[in-house]
Image (cartoon, rainbow, N blue to C red; front, side, top):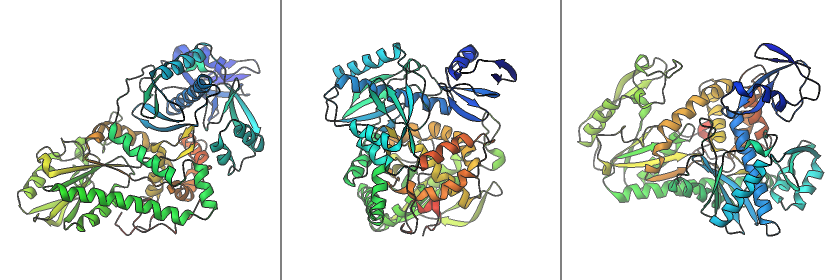
Length: 549
């Protein structure tokens, strides 16, 4: 078989696996090779070489490679727990959400203490040291459903009920079977770096990130974030929607309208609670709202303003984006592109001067940023704060005290907002919150900016880097958290996102991510957006909002 690697041709016997080829070239890479890209298509290392293959290597430092490591580590953990608990299997083991570099696994029906965690760690290490193989098997859907029913994995039975494909890929390790969407490593020997620690009602699986693929950082609890995510999970349980299969079932049973109303009411109640706390605190003049891209900050700020008015306050929305420096003064990143995410892209001095003047009772003309010309303009937007006036300020740097260094702390109330998805594909396949936000942004960018899905995907790594540097480090400083995710939203976004993703051709670098997202959206039954209230946060992305978003 002729194989082309880095422009050179090599000959390999038929039946050679890509893992064997990767081993020949591993010395040339600082990180472990996880996958190969063959003629533009990602392949697992267990696959055998194809004729006239042009091969590129993807390591754990790549996005796809890191996801593969996390997925395989999760399977390793599940197999180890299966072995440790034996006949006394827990009622439920669920991969819930990410906290920093760790993944929270809730356990129902079994106590997780340090002694149990140590047994799990030891069993995981045994499987790693033995390089326990992972077998990928293809089952007819009905046989897969029967297999998982015997194993008590009812969540997978429900998921496959709505699966269109006639075949299901199942991963086997000895007598343990599981299902994961996405790529897997050939054997457990690849998962060298991990830690397992008891946490809350379960444990944390700590893993390296793609920046330092051999370093497992100590777990740093984020109490407010955890509580917000746990609250979302609890509400999902009360609505009997824990997984995508549960959501699809309720859609089929005609319960979507009620579900939308309940979810929207829950969000409105939370917004009302935050507004009441602001009003009761007294002395608050600046409500600082910050969160990552596509969190629904604009709609939230408008809905919060309405709730503040019910408490006799007079809110005035201000966007930190209006304090951008002129385009030619914007800092650039290491690639020479404008870095709109960094603090230096904001005229901090002007913002503090204006806000301090308003706090002192002075009249101030506020700027408006013209995104077409890249310049700051003044259009007669004059403000003067009265006794009941309050400024609702929205922007990614709102929680950073450097942004509002001149304002007294007692005059500020900080809110962190993000779309913290609690829904899972099934109990072992979590939905990353970043996927939900990326799909939101893709749909909104296409509608409001005429941007292609390719462009949104292309920009996403830069956006994520900005969030990691400028938002997440400050989230625990917030006075309140608001979760803008709605349990039904991906079923609505599906109909808008799929055509955009299908427009990306196989020869484009963004194709792999588009294909991954399309496969992910296949799990959902699509629904119309017609039943959405016009003040819904989802309207900010699909259109039809009553707010100027």
